[in-house]
Amino acid sequence: MFPQMKSRSTFVRQAANLRQYKQELQQVLAHTVCVWLNRLFGLEPLQFDSLVTE
Image (cartoon, rainbow, N blue to C red; front, side):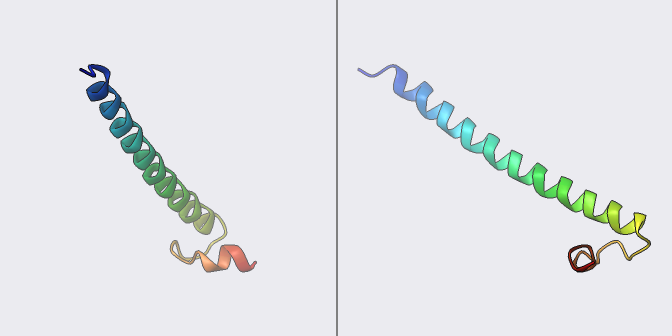
């Protein structure tokens, strides 16, 4: 009766998965950049607070 309903739900699921992957990639990239900046400034790699306060 509604042939497009299955493909529509697949599209919505794929869009949600893509959004989740994008968020995970942004988190990994932000972490990597912060570690790189800390090493550049001669700080410990995981001292992210010092990047904000200085």
